[in-house]
Amino acid sequence: MAGATTHKVSFIDRIKMGLSLHKKNSKESLLAIFKHPANSLLTILVLAIALALPGIFFIMANNAKSLSSNWDSSMAVSVYLKDSANEAQAQKLVGELLEQQHFKLVTLTTKEQALEEFKKYSGIANSLEMLEENPLPMVISIVPNDDLIRVSELETKVKELEQLALVDSASLDSEWINRYQEILKISEKIGSFISFLLGVGVLLIVGNTIRLAILNRREEIQVIKLVGATDAFIRRPFLYTGLWYGLIAGVIAALMISILGNLVVSSTSRLAELYQSQYQLLGLTISQTLILILIGALLGLLGSWFSVRKHLKEIQPS
Image (cartoon, rainbow, N blue to C red; front, side, top):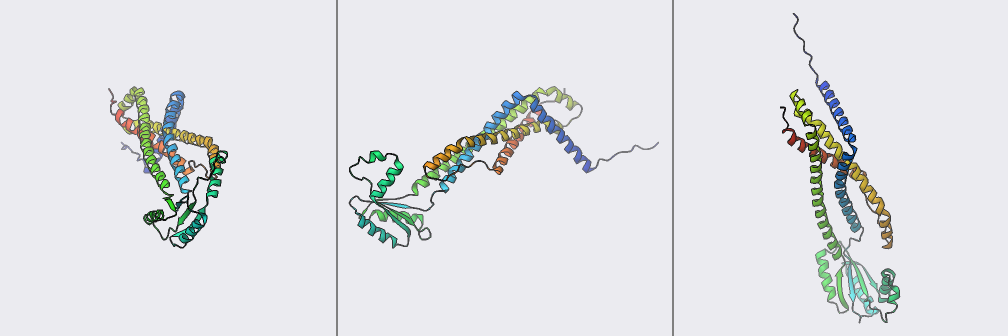
């Protein structure tokens, strides 16, 4: 009697079988989502909103940084002269300041020039015509040589300028930019924390959705376990379900952000024109959009993995 023959499955065949099984599970999981469009759409929209909000925070921070980077980064100094100072004295002071190597540009704005600029940009030119005398002081604008002076030294120079007989006060114009940068840092921290909470929310939503799916298929899972199916075999379709939820939600979130950008881009352009700026609103780049979609898919996969790991152990064949 001939001995029984055995057929050894090659490593390549195992890979092909595994890929075929993954393809089948992913397709079936996607079709299962579309079989219940109402419930699936509600879950996906909630996930999309949770993913879109961090994306909006990111765009706002990017635009705020871009806006501040367009400003002159040099530490400009404004020197306000006393009302008693005349133009000849002011021009003499400008010449003295130009002789100092620390300053590369020194310009004088007379009272008349300051008033004309204020009329042009304030929007209350008619009211200013009623003034009997010009209340604005002469201003000397100084741009320091960044290669020869540091910020700490510049602050000392500002104090020295305030001691001059013709000077009423002096200020470092970059101080408000520094305050703006600090506000940006605080906003980024708040945005990051809120984004973290929304990410946890996505995990919980996907986890709860998968938990309900497992409970609905409890009897089916018990039967499959009776015939010897492994936890990995049972787990795979649920993991793909979570992955699809996150992936689709990521795509919709990117569309939401794009729609919001298109809604405000014209208003932003008009606002920039009013300030005589060429600033353009920044949106998500292609790489950033792909990252957002990938984050959604990963969060969906993680949420389903945690849920399946916890609830699948509780179902045992009876």
